[in-house]
Length: 383
Ligand code: CA
Image (tube, rainbow, N blue to C red; front, side, top):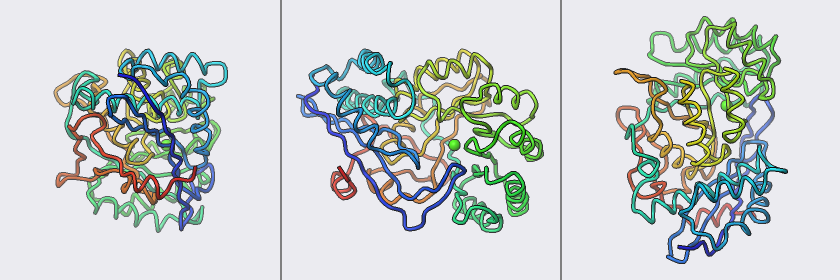
C-alpha cells in the first residue's frame, strides 16, 4: 500500500461570543484536518491541535512543505518508522508546538488508515481495549467578561451536573482573589451533589501566586490542579507538588517522549496530560503512556479539538492501562469540551455524547471509528 496524496484543510469559524482563558481571548475555533489517500482507495483522517490562540496555518504549512514530501509514496502501515522519519527531519526546527502538532495530525491519519486496512479500531491495534466506556469531565467555565463572574460560573457548574456530568474542571487564573471567589460560589452551588472537581489556571501564575491559590484549593479535595505554573518552570511544578496536598497535573504544552521524559524524571507531576493532536499523535501518546507507566503516573489526555481529535483521544483512552493495578483502580477520564465550537460536532458522524449512565462509549468501528463529513469540511475550510 502506498500514500498517494496528503491534503490539509484549515477549518475556522469566528465565535459569535468570544471567550477568555487566562492567556487571552478566543475569537475563533480552528482545526487543521489531515486527509491521506492511498492507492488502495482508503482514506485516513487526522487532526493537528490548534489551541485558541494558535494559528492553524503553522501546522498546515509544516505538513505541506516539510512532511508531505517525506511521506508521499511511503507505505502508510509503517507508522513508527514514519514517525521517526518526520521527527528526525524536523528536529532542528521542531520538537515542540505546531511542528509536533503537524506530525501528530499525519500520525493520527496513518492510524485511521491502518485500522481501516485491518478492519479494526485503533485501540485494538494499539494492543487492545482496557475499557469500552470512559467517564467524561466537563471542561468549560470560560469567561465572557473576565473577572467577577462567580455567580454565572456557579450556575454553569449546576448546568453541567444537570446535563449528566459527575466531574468538571473549573478555569481559574483570572487573579487569585477572583479565583477564590469563583471556588467559593461554585462550592456553595453544588453542595450536596456528587461532583468531582478539578481546576486549571493555564499557567497564569508564578510560584508565589500559584502556591497561595493552591493552599486555598487544598480545602476542596480536587482531583487535580492543572498547569499551575508555566511549562518551562519544571522547578515550580516540583515545588508545588511537594508543598500542596492537591495532585498536580500538566503536559498539554509538552511534546513527544523527550519532553515528557523531563517532567517524569524530575517527579514534577502526579498526572500527565498529552494532547493526542500535539504530543506526537497516537504514536506519541503510546510513547508517553509507556514512560508514564514506568513511573507509576496517571495519563489523562488533554482534549480540545474537533470531532476527529476527540475520536483519536477516545481510542487512546480505551488502550491506556491504569497507572497502578487494583480491583478498584482509578480509571482515566475524558476531557469533554463544553465550550463554544461551531463545527466540532457536525464534522463527524459520531460526535461525543453521554449515554444514560453519564459515560461516553468508545467506537469499535475500524480506525478512529468515525466518518468525516466532507460537506462540513468544505463549509468551514479557509485555505
Ligand atoms: Ca488545560
